[in-house]
Image (cartoon, rainbow, N blue to C red; front, top):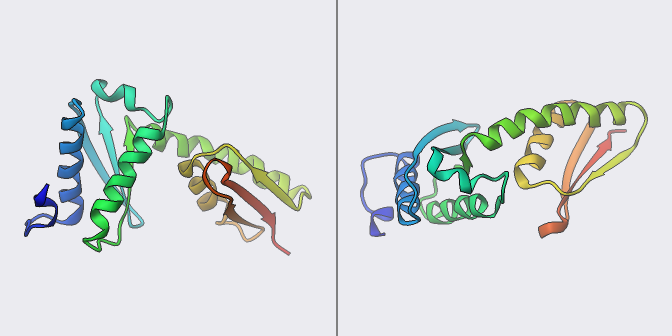
Length: 158
């Protein structure tokens, strides 16, 4: 795949879409890729009936691996983007669901709890809670741990 580093006229996001399309094609999938860039994060939403088996709802390992491959392949280009892969907008919908979770956690901190630890979340859920909760000066969040033991700590600010 020498084209990853050649003098291509498109920008890094367009090149990455092409690269992801090739990977999906090699895997035997036929799908559209919709791209949205939000705060230096390029989200590649793979759309189609053919890719339902890749849904993070079933097993996020494949989608996480694809995101990791895109990050590693593009790191040499110095793009400055974070790359995330989604399937049929599952993760985007999940972020919207996390808004109510963030509200409940915020209410618990506001009600007097000093600290809450949240286990069992993938990186998308943790990141969504970080963004939603850190918008308020009452709380601060931090991810701790490694691998399957990574968790979110939410603390009341003094």
